[in-house]
Amino acid sequence: ELESTQLALEEMAILHENDLDLVHDLEKELRDVRREREDLVRKLGHLRTDRLAMVEYIQQLVTENQGQRDDIEEAQRQREDAEAIRVELVHFRDEYTELLDKYEAKVVEIHELRDELEELHHREDLRTGERRP
Image (cartoon, rainbow, N blue to C red; front, side, top):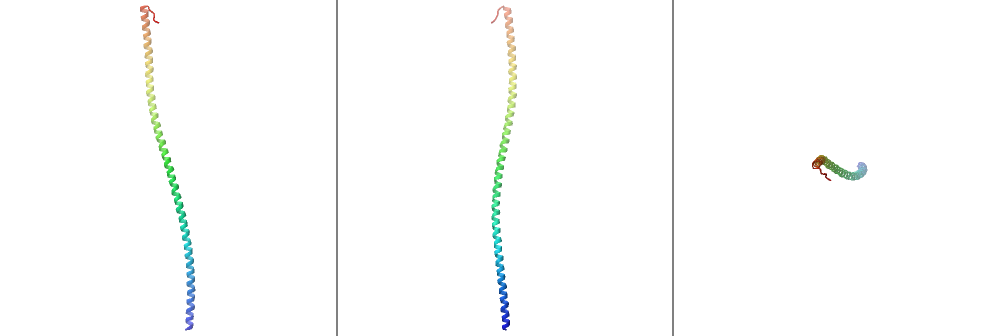
């Protein structure tokens, strides 16, 4: 019975030693898992920082893009205004040309009337025998 107790004690010591090895291995595994978790948390922090930087960069691009759109829209409005002014100038030129043609026609008419008047005066002078200054 002593022998069997001693064998049982030796088995228990072996089991205890195995349990201690197992506990030691589990503790080491737990440390490794914690280290990996810390690495993942750190990487996640970097990813969040990178993501925020990307979001800010995208917002900056959107703002710049909106500014360019505003500039393009303003340029389009200016082009439309310039076209409207050009159309008005063409209309004005046409009206001016028409008025100038009428003016020139009146000048010709006045010259013709003056010539007729001079001819009438000349005839009158011949008829009356007088000379006009």
